[in-house]
Amino acid sequence: MRILDRYILKSVIYIFLSCIFSFLFLYIIIDLLSNLDDILKHHATLILLARYYLSYLPVMFVQVSPFACLLSTVYTFGKLNHNNEIIAMRSSGLSIFDIARDTIIFGLFISLLVFWVSDRFVPGALSENQKIKAQIEEGSKSSKAKKPEVILNLSMYGSRNRLFFISKFFINTKTMEGITILEHDENQNLTKKIVADRGTYVDGLWRFSRCITYTFDRNGQVIDEPSYLEEEIMSIPETPRDMANLRQKPELMDIRQMQDYIWRVSKSGATTVIRNLKVDLYQRFTMPFTSLIIILLGIPFSLMTHKRATGMASIGVSIIVGFLYYILDAVCLAIGKSGLLMPSLAASLSHLIVLSTSIYLISRLP
Image (tube, rainbow, N blue to C red):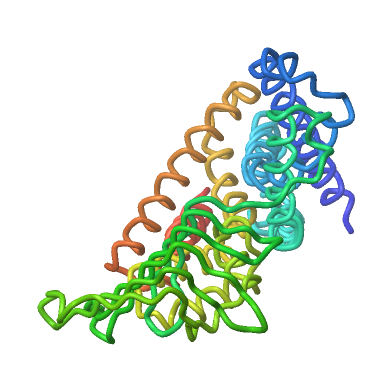
């Protein structure tokens, strides 16, 4: 590595790490102060608080890494421009891409690291964070007692075009209460409605108690009288574990779990839900590379900044550029979820636009 490359990369890494630690520290301090009354009210222990904030570190790292990359790039290259070092480098025959090569490689490394952390640690960290938060709200002492895990108001898409609504689902006992199942045909027309008071999973089968079944025609009208059974064995392939997994929010799943969830939901024919989930899935692949792309975007903006402005101007430029970038990304995702764009294109369109804009601006630099 050239001395010049080490000189630039050292500044980028130093500011990046400073930003990461500063953002994490500020988040913890602000969150502690804003929730101090609740913490004192519930007598949360220091160990529980430490676990709470440690569990959120992977999430914070994924969220602030792109902005830290942008700020470190804008500040470093803005300072080089302020000191006329960019002019000296260009006069020696180096192009902008030659000067920024190691910074771009650093951005690629951070992007791969964010991808690994977001898929390997973030889902579990979010789940653990929510559990610890619930313990704090209930009281750290009372939370030690073992309580049955209950999922309230569970709704999910199952196989065979079924939509489940369950008031209470007891994971430990494999029972559910307040059950409503809607069955649809391939055109998403309602064909059957099943209402039951209670369901129990025994020997690989679901046994429903006090079950009422309504049958509908193509016009959505009830056919004949509803049938009533005191007990009925239902042919439902979803196991209690499947239901516990399916109720998870997409942000609490890793990529493999999301792919499996989409495969299960695809059997229900719920096109809107499937499209939204696919957009979220493809975003898992494209989002980590925001750090790399935003570095490329920050280079031309830092070199176009007035030479007398470095520190505060770097922060201002980073905020504006980052804000515009995330607005563009949110718009593209919204268009994809509305069905106007393919999910894969919606998740990557903002990256493609920003990448092409960055390359164009860099090529137009003097």
